[in-house]
Image (tube, rainbow, N blue to C red):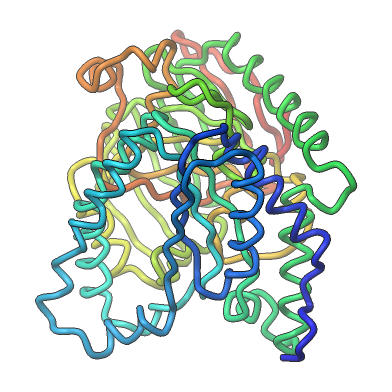
Length: 413
């Protein structure tokens, strides 16, 4: 690549500001822990600068490296794949318990581990999930303000634009990220305020309807998703239990809530590939009975899928259902990002595993036992995959089964 970066520096600076002010809502004196690919150092530097400008206490970045990850899978001892750095995750959980904010910057090759042993991939993911659970609970229970955003890594860019030279691929991916993240205009903070207000309007309508279930119908899909008792729809900005308003995903187009873990019936097919921990899963097809996956297949990555749903009992049940119109800006871009942060915001999706306690009325005051009693799911994982398209119809069902159109041909009805 040339010495001059193909990434627009003005928009990159706007993205960093948006991450801190909109994504995290970082408060003076608050610490920040962030993870990022080593290639994302230019964005990390800008984020750290913005964080300190906002009055951050201590900012601690942790870098990952694709080549180091691959080295482990190629040369690591077999028994090492059943272990994770628990000492590190304990420290992260302690930081979160003391109020530290969390930022994840993504941008690695989404197919990094596609050619590696799926057994090792599955075992490593399980070990990491178990070790990270105490820290993850602060995020899934929304105890802290957190956010995820993206950096246009070169290997990722070449996956999205395989026919372009690397420099042009990076430029194109960067522009797509900037557009989806609403930083390609002069005032991203105002643009996000308007967008969040629109998502709140959708959430308000769904909360007023108090549907008992949603029924999805389309090619390869006839799925009824019962909704948890006392569920609550959310979208866009949310207030964490620490009182700080943040946008967990930059970008976001979804409104979402909690399914009832025992009340999901039928079959469903994925409409986009799922990139999970460096492996690509395509054409996922699953069947639910009494809320549990009883059959699961994929045309690619099926071994990884089977390992995933065997993580624990909750991994075969749903923790989230989200509505995204087919005409969303990310869908309209026509790009397949091979990255869930973006692809989930191009289509309606469901998530296997852990539910969000915020998606209950008064969720901040509910115990784990109360959440479970109302139908919330518990698991070491939370993995979103896409089931929406321009051919999907969705009805909201009341307690008597009467239907109200919610989506028709992939759009709000």
